[in-house]
Figure: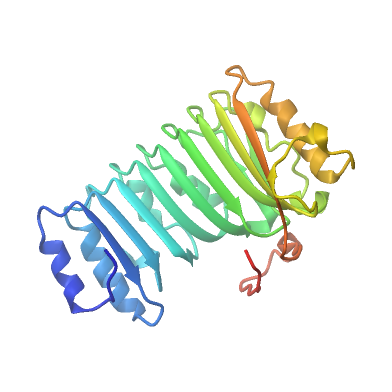
Length: 272
C-alpha cells in the first residue's frame, strides 16, 4: 500500500487485524507528523512494516515495550544514526536500513537485537573510514547479512568470533585502487566460520559487466588481486561456501570520503 501522509494514516493503528503495512512518505511531509504517525504504527498490532521515503527522525520514535514488530524495512532515506531503542525490539527478525555513515554505536545497537536473523544495510561510508564487526556478544542469531557501501574509502573488517551463525554474506563496494578499501584486503571473511554462501559485487574500472573470474583477468588488475585474496580467505572456511563475484563498470567517480572524517554533509551526483 502506498499513500500520501495525511489524516487517513491515523486510523491504521486502530485496525486490530492488520499485520502488514507499506507506507510511502513524501519528502514534503512534515517531519513532526511523520514521527507521530510512525510511532503510532509501531504501537499497533503490525508484524511487518515497510517505510520508503522521508523525512524520518528515528531517534524520536518511542515504540512500546514489548513491541511485536517482526519485519521492519526503512529505505529511500538515509538515517543519521541507528536509534538506541532499536536494540529493545525483541521480536524483530528482519531489518533493512539506509544509514548515512555507519559507526561503532550503530553496529553495537544492531548487534544487540536478540532475534535478528536478516540484516540488509546500505551506507555511504564508515565513520573515520572504518566499519568493524567486533567479536563481542552481538549478532548471535544473524544468518543473513548484506552491506552496500556507496563511496570509496571504507575499511570493512570482521573480527574473530563475530556473527557466529552467519550463513549468507553479501557485500557491494567500489574498487578503483587499494585506497578505496582503506587498508582492507579480505575483510576477515575467514573468521565467519558458519558461511555457506558469499556474493561480492564490485564497481570498478574494468569495462565489463557480469560474473567475474580472476583467473580470466589477464591484466593483473587491482580487482584481480583483491578478489584473489577474498577467494583465498573463503577457501579456509570449514563449510566450503560457494562464492560469486559480480563486476560492474563504475560510471561514477572515485570519492575517498575517509580523507574527511569531520565531514557532516555530502552531496554527490552519481548514476548509481
